[in-house]
Image (cartoon, rainbow, N blue to C red; front, side, top):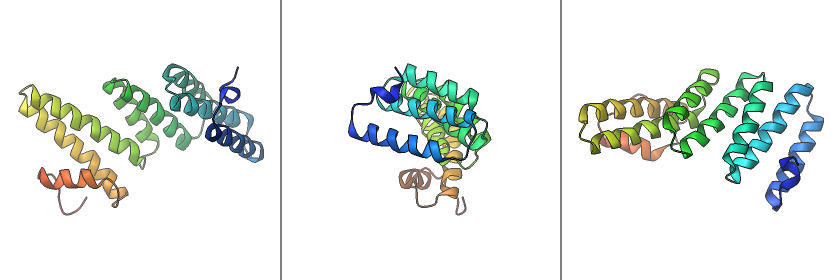
Length: 171
């Protein structure tokens, strides 16, 4: 049974109905519409914590989707799942692939920085201060890129950049 028939809450049903209406009136080809259905079902499964199902849907969407902007968001969602499962290296791969297609994907820039910062904290706890500083520097560079695109976002990251001495007057 398709995920669209499994949705049992009002928000999911409303989103599905709206998405179906938009899908019908959108002037796109059949392949793009099919990719969107898989993407939508992937998002629904991901929201329900059904990560294996979400990854299957995103993989199908990725095979069908030709638009690089849309592909970047599919890759981003795949990365989110890997990050939430603690698979940081895999997540970084997918975030970077998404950024290659859409360099202004600030959510990916932020999430890459968060992973590098987390890894820096773990290195610091393990006593490897050189590795920690390198990872913190990487986190700082990605946060600067995100802030450069959206200066009013990521206030905690901006504060961290200031307090860690990684902030330069220009992002």
